[in-house]
Amino acid sequence: MSASPRSGATDELGPDESEPERGGPPDADRPAGHDGSDLLAALLDGMDAALCAFDADGVVTHWNREAERILGWTAAEAVGRRGLAGWAVRSADAEEVEGRLRAAMHAPGRQVHEFALLTKDGGRVLVRTQSAAVRGPDGRPAGLYCAFSEVHTQIDLERSIALSEALFQDASWGVVLVDADLRPAVVNAHAARAFGTGRTAVLGRPLGELLSEGVEELESALTHVLAEGTPPALADIRVSVRTPEGDRRRCWRSGFVRLASPLAEEPVPLGVAWLFADVTEAKQAEQEASLLRFRSNQLHRAARAASECEDPVEAAAVHLDFALAGFADHALIDRVASGRAAPSGDQAAPVRLVRVAAAPADGSGLLTGRSGLPVRYAEGHPALQCVDRAGSVRATAGAVPPARARAWAEAHQWPADTVHALCTVLRSRGRTLGVVTFLRGSARSPFARPDAVYAESVAAHIAAALDLAALRRDKSP
Image (cartoon, rainbow, N blue to C red; front, side, top):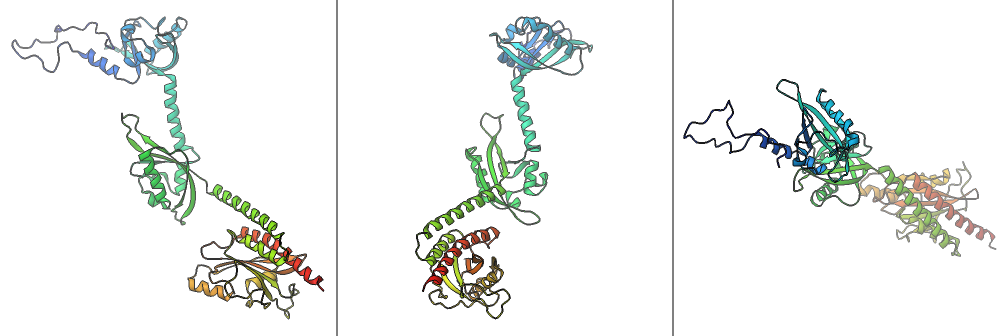
């Protein structure tokens, strides 16, 4: 059954048509029995929207296949009925519904309404309609057409559009649509700020021009998503963003979604939607919290191990061994030779420091506590400054060639691979007992303020052990 009736159609020639010459060939471009109504029916049936039409008397003249799919009424059952009452609309609602439709016949433009229609099996479907008048040759209304769709389908479409607009306008995380060539095709405002540039300046550029580090990892992830589909979990990708002020190290928690055309029978990849949030500060906080837990655990373990040592100096060395883990490469304990520091301002009695312990086991040939001889620290040495100030002192060789760094370490009486140093005073009951020095090589970063806080905690435990040793010596006959 066609989507529209063929009433009035005829194969006879009309008054304005001329008969072909006798004996001439028939019109090859127009098959017998074919007229415009067939083409119109085919066009209506091919539409994605449901469509019906009424003449001036309210009789249904057209009913396409999408209308049949939604309501279940075929074109044969719908065409020719007057109005919708009793079959496509409940009788109680018919007056209101048909009144809205008739109003559209005399109103300019399209009218949009929502109301419930009945399906053939008695169900109700909420639809959104767009209705407009159909004008005759004289310009007067000759009928109206009504296109409709299920409201949830329209709402889903509107939500999809609203979501897209929100992602690219107001989202608090970065959204980048990357094409099949791994180049940004669309970016939102948040992503543009993350790249340190404008939204249009990012488009079409290779990712290597935007990032100095992390490009290989990011492009590998995008290529995998294009080939295999959306991954099951988020990934933290560390990158360095190129900016006029220099590279900025960031950590972006990223999710990827493969995009494919919904219009093709076979999925055609359109690219990848890359969504990311900057979690740099959060990751730093996590690392700092984890480091703090580890260091607190090390202090606790060291205290338990040291409590089993009969020799207080051995207990101090145990604290040193536990403190080194993940913190420094070497550690030294130097005790004030006289048991306490010289009075402030007394230049006649310079401070002398004797090596008590070294960790790991000192194989550098430097003096140890067994010799009883003071370490030859030059004037202004960080360890001597630490005693003089009764506080922590940090020192570093800086970014210098290895030979100069080695000479700097040897001049300070430290192992040759030392590049960074942290000296912390050992104090107990108001007295300065010595210095603990932590040393790092070039593979580690310089000591920072949090490191000094941890070193002071370790020094407090070591100072208590050394003070106990000093008390034992003072009480011995």
